[in-house]
Each structure stands twice: as structure tokens, then as C-alpha cells.
Length: 258
Image 1 (cartoon, rainbow, N blue to C red):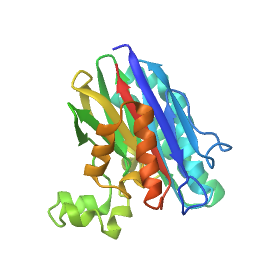
Image 2: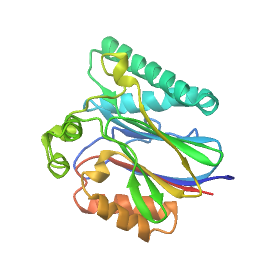
Image 3: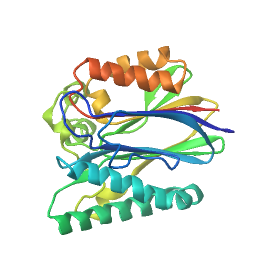
Image 4: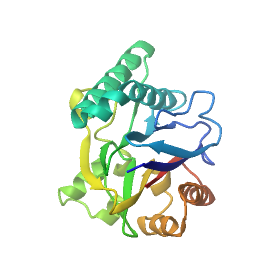
């Protein structure tokens, strides 16, 4: 596979005053000066390459610090991850989580961040996640959600204690059970999915929960199907999330594997 066409867009939204999201696109992420302004970027990356979204937690300044730390640490680990697969991603996650706990102790704050990560390598890609940022693949025109949310609500669904449609509206959908910065190392070990082969999954979407809080899976799928390019996809998805109220920060990365 030659590489990946990509587009990323990140917006604070219509309600919040600061953007706690960040991302990683083959070495590019938002600096502190960029995170509170609308951000858009598109380009091409040669495989192997890495893409990720992060949704920071903790309120003003704290969330931005968490997602930025995760992105900066990923930049340091990118070479190891491209060479080492799951073990390298786990090492990265443990290190990033440890750095966030050090920051919390030093600054006397509480923070953390989700992580949704895609590693494109040759003819396939693998997916890793912590928290409730979501990653989807377009399987022959059908949008399939790859990742499971690490939330109390989704845990209850998996245990048969709650219906999936009820979990989508439950307050427990915001209570994370695993994320970077948890108080123990287990919480920073990501789930892994794949590999998925590019010839069957040409398009990939990474999002923070500011998107799926505003739109259903069917609505996201419909806009993806209408989009001709990665740029079209991120712009139509983020515009629709903002049109519906933009109650949270929203960040989307769309990939087209070629």
C-alpha cells in the first residue's frame, strides 16, 4: 500500500470555552496556541504511519494538558510502535499514563485522556483504544464500529444488565472505566483490534465523543457515504455536530487507504 490520504478537523464547539481534544496525524498534533482555534489539516502520509485522537478530561487547562501530553509522548514512541506492534503501544500507554499521574501529583490536579489509535502498516491496519473515543471502518460501503467504549454503561451492556439503546442515553456513558492517567497501570493497557486488510476497508474514521453525542451511528454512516474525500468527511461530520448544538469538543480524522 502506497499510503494514506487523511484529513483532520477539531473544534471547541458551541458550549465549551476550551478544547480539551487533541490528535496525532503522522507526527502532527495541536500545540497549546492552536488548540482553542478551529483546526483543519489534510495531506498524504506514506505507510507505515500512525493516527490517533485524544479527549482530555479534568476541566479548564487540565484536559488540554492531558491530551497534549499523550500526543507528545506518542511522537516520541512512534518509531518503536511502527516497529513493535502491540507491545510497543502498551509501553507507550503505560509511559503516557505515568507521565499524567506525575503531572497530577506535581500540579495537584485530576486529569486523564482517552486514546483511539490506528497504525497503518503495509496492506493492513491495527486499532487500539482506551476510553470512549471511537474508531470505525468502512467495509465495502457499510460503516462498522470497531472499538468498544470503556464506560460503566457499556460494561453493563456487555454483562446483560442494560440495553444498548438505553446505554446511549444513560449518564453512566460518561463514566470511564479505563483511560490514560488512571491510578493503576491496568487502566492504561489498551484493547487491540485487527489487523484489518486495506483492500476490504478503504476508509477509516477516528472521532472523539463530541461527534457520537450529537449523531446516531446511522447518521454518521450516511454522511460518510455521501463524502467523496477525507476532507468532505470531516467537514460534513463536524459541521453537522456543530449545527445540532456542539455541546462538546469534537475532533474527527478521516483516512483513505490507497
